[in-house]
Amino acid sequence: MSSVEEARWERRAVIDLDAIGHNVRHVADLVAPAMVMAVVKADGYGHGALPVARTALESGATWLGVAHVSEALALREAGISAPMLAWLHTPGTDFAAAVESHVDLGISGWELEHVAAAARAAEQPARVHLKIDTGLGRNGATLEAWPDVLAAASQLQEEGLIRVVGVWTHLAVADEPDRPQTDHQLEAFRAAISAAEEAGFELELKHAANTPAALSRPDAHFDMVRLGLGMYGLSPFRDQDHEALSLRPAMTLSARVANAKEVPADQGVSYGLTYRTHSATTLALIPLGYADGVPRVAVDGPVQIAGQRHVSCGRVAMDQFVVDVGQVPARELVGTEAVLFGAHGPTATEWADAAGTINYEMVTRIGSRVPRVYTGEAAETVAAGEERHG
Image (cartoon, rainbow, N blue to C red):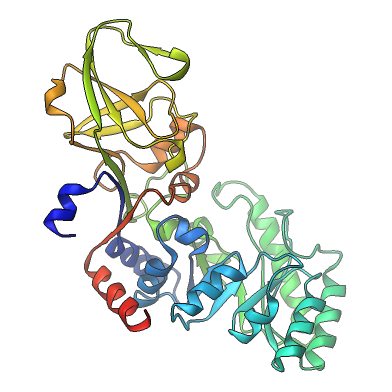
């Protein structure tokens, strides 16, 4: 960022791509020889899917994972050729484009006829990963339906319309390592794998582990782990922070103080006047609101201003919220950086606690009105890649 740009920014989410690279390498070392799928759905958890994808692949990830085929196609159009899996579909999904673009498809069962039709039109087989629901209750074939899904897939594979290259599942409570349900899910998963192999499928990939299982359950690693939250430097566990896991938060969310004023005791603040000052104090106005992803329901969200920690007061509005900073002269505040969360300030987890939610939501909800700024040595590599494929 140039000195002029540095002077003029108002609000931003700074993404440290070197932190992304560190996190990928760290987890890749932990789970080897299993491979790492970097999960870049939801615009890379709010960090930017393309820069994150390029950084992750440079840092040891061999696969990319997205929810929607449209997300995969956007990465393909940007020049990403790495193996890629998309897993959340509707009858309106563009399966034909996925097949033609060599995007692997996660399949629960009902999609098989749609995928087969797309493969027939494309005159090439679709690569599919059959998903077994081992207990999460979302996508995937039930244990009871699994034999029928295997039979249907086997018939389509014999016809040359699909290739079953993987079997996978998703864990429900891996972020709570003491709960026995993960053991039950893995037992069911192993049985589903055995059934698939007995049905004649030669599986290239078996995968179950999300970030918490990658970090805490070596028996869940199989051939590949799907690295989501941990890639962005956040902890999935309540009793371990990112430092305990040797992860580095990648996003720093901040804004410049837009206004400051000294007010008397009993001054009401924001809609509903749910907060009143306890004594004469200074109020600082932060130009980020729920339209930018700051939760309206957050209470006492931490904010670091000039190296000092304060908390939000009153309701978060659409574009702004207020911080009671105490006896700081107002003239010193306007234009000062206010950090909501990041590697050297409050954490996304603290904001999640203030809003009664999880750190996953805090980073993914940051809106498009907040510019992303990429830093670190990896940013140069990403920029070079964008120039080649721009």
